[in-house]
Image 1: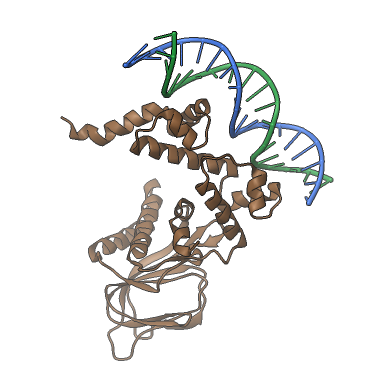
Image 2 (image 1 turned 90 degrees about the horizontal axis):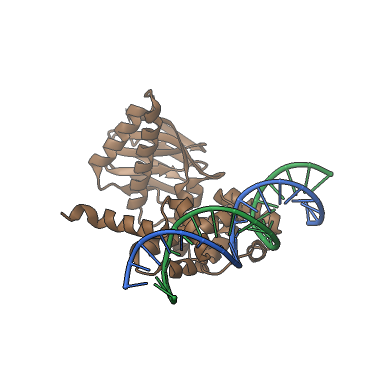
Length: 287
DNA sequence: TCCAACGCCTTCCATGCGTG
DNA sequence: CACGCATGGAAGGCGTTGGA
């Protein structure tokens, strides 16, 4: 079971997408010649998008002299230094400070990313930073949504450009244990699970197991399992010709209950859902 | 860690509707 | 009529929670 598989699991994708974002500040700055700091540990994450000039950043032991076109991530809680380079023009950069938490963990404790990436879509990234800057102090209900969406977009671009991303679960024993349980669930979706059986996998008391599971995933085990089953069922309805009865069986739910639950989940009965998806895929193409 | 109480989950069964 | 599916009621079991 390697790290790559773990990252591909439905669990991690879902789980990391639940990230809580909080922007503290975003701006564009042409930094002064005396811009520097040495060996300090910030509470927040920083993203720098270098547009002009030169400078260095250091996280832990890794030191990097940065060029325009690079997006740099300085994760919260890491030992950092930065500064200008003598006789070189200083950085002109977009930057922002933000917190990103999944449950009670820092996102970039869970995700090991490179220190920087080379950006493909310069225009797009500038646009997102501009949005961030414009909406951070804006009035109105939508501003906070826009800030969040711009920040997500920037982080996504960073992740997409990263050649290697590792999920690091070792910092949290609960995460490690629960992801083992979730892998088991994903691998055996069509069978039935008892809480006792799942708790045994990680050697926990059932009631303590439920608590831990909920802390990590935000859902009780049963709710989590059912959501997974219904998502799988929706996929099967969408992409296969299997009968409803067969699909119910495949995802381990009794037929009549499946109908009921599926409707609660999607608003459509299974067959209505299939029809709806069929029409929405081909509908606009037909005359 | 254990226990008890509550409420939700699940199963079973009956019924109805549309289709071949 | 048989079959596949949807819907709903009833009941019991089990998951979940909170307190000690």
